[in-house]
Image (cartoon, rainbow, N blue to C red; front, side, top):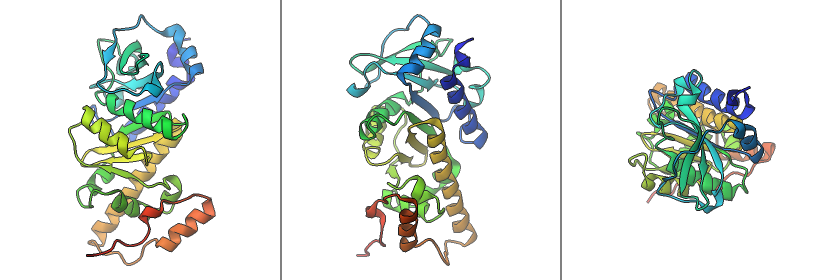
Length: 279
């Protein structure tokens, strides 16, 4: 037995590899963090190494004090996670003030958690609060069709939500609250971490303009499925726009959206109904 035989580690590695196979993680692009359950921590604890030093994150989230996270490494390639997990991923512990981390397993060779860890941590803090602790996964990837949309649509939650809802029938069911949008910012710092966490107080999906997508969820399958659904809807939207030269003959209407919500028992965000008023 080794830590690589523990189910949560196997599931984490599988999700990293699935993202690589989708083409969402060029070079060292993207990152994945998972807030571990207490029983998962105990399964992994026998394989923990001597903890590293505490490293200040520049952000804090007191509701996550003492938690443990599995994380991809800074500068590491998703394509290598399945081949060399000990150097590509790791487990970090959060201190009692919830403002610092230290490595307890993995990230060998003096590696560090992803440079986006502050963004992930703040979003874990927010999503844990608004979901009563159910959210455990934050996933950032570079799905190309979604990124392409950020160059042609106004950068608003309304525009992106309506475009995605109307491009694929399952979208209103998969993300009934809609999606939020963060304007372009330099990645890796506290500014984008705070901006994203504000968006994710309302949504479990945050679009990073000209960069990628942040998704959150209770488990690996749900979160990966959310990312996959958004990207496929974006692909359909772009195909329609390009093949029809921007002209749409028919689409899913607001009444259709309400019918979907009624049939599947979901409540859609009413902010996104109705065509915008023109001044």
